Amino acid sequence: MNQDKEKLIKWIEEHETDLIRFLKKIVQTPSDNPGGDCLPIATKLHQELDELGFDDVSLVPVVEADVKAVGMMSVANVVGRNKFGDGQGPSIVLNAHGDVVPPGLGWSVDPYGGEIIDGKMYGRGVAVSKSDIAAYSYAVLALKQAQVQLTLKGTVDLAFTFDEETGGEIGPKWLLDKGIVKPDLAIAAGFTYAAVNAHNGCLHFEIKTTGKSAHAALPHTGIDAIEATTDILQALYTYRKTLAVKKSAVPGIDHPTLVVGLISGGINTNVVPDECTIRIDRRLIPAEDAVLAEAELYKVVNEAVAHIEGLKVDITKILHADSFGPVPEDAPLIATLAANWKALMHGKGELSINGVPIYADARHFYAAGIPTIMFGVGPRLLEEANGHRADEHIRLEDLLDATKIIACTLYDLLAGKPE
Image (cartoon, rainbow, N blue to C red; front, top):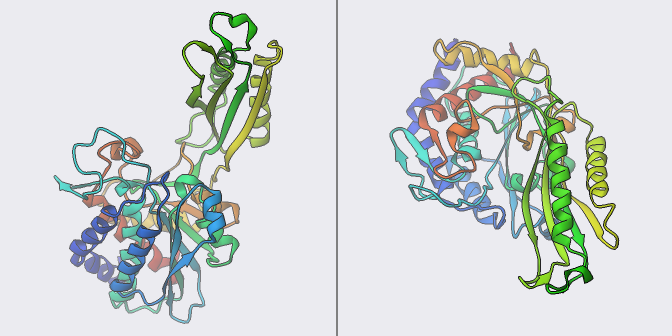
């Protein structure tokens, strides 16, 4: 490890208290989505970055009609541009999201308290992915303030967005489409113990059956929408079993999945229900064809109720998120990250490189042809951090380690010395 990297590590260690305080402030700023009122956290983060001394940080508004179209109330993106040397080097973007799922029940602490217990910080969004915002910010700050001797060349853009829970269309995709960020390389939110080079895609569907209401004393005069939906559910669950044989070749990803997550219907206890609606989550492994998967689902649903005369079935696609990767394991970005991970993680072996069954904003950079990796703050598995569950948390040790690894990786890339 050269003297410049030692300076970066020392600087980060000396500013650990500030790093933790920064993270706590953004955890304490609610940013539930759905709900989708995320302008307050974007404004707060912009203010905090400005106070840290970032000299080119902008609060980038999104057209109100676009905000409403994705079901959100308010949002802006936060972009901080950092030029090193003459800027004539790689352009790297660090992207993490600050919107979070609502806290839900079962918390033993205040979900917006940022409470620290036994070396862990608790709070909604602390793992997914506000800790990544903190790690990325302080990694870049270290590069700017640690007085490294070698002249670094290139740019690093902090791109903090607030619509991941609704698909990333007005966050990272919007920034890319508008040319506000034009990266050569991208690092997106992830965990500390793996470089994620692939993730699943996802299709969401709403299926609505419309029958005919009738008095419960004369059910034969109606068309029961809930009964019809039961036939659809049985067909879907049978179809789901066939997905288990479609194995992925990507480590960390098993097979496609299907979940019926919502159901509603009926008028009253004594009325034959004329409507029933369900919503489906269909995960796609990276090798799958989304068009074929959609056609399969339509076929299963329509065949399940083809025998019910007078029933109307409407299938609406709510979301289509493409899969990401796999990025080749020997890609320079992954190799550089892996070398720094091995050097800094004190004999913990090689960095794991694998896929994950979730879907995330990394796919937008990959779709634009940008070499991308997911790496950030957190444990080996999402379950360990209670991501999207009560008592979500991260270990402060991981926060510090990830910040060091990212800073050293950026150093190598900007110094023109990728592994």
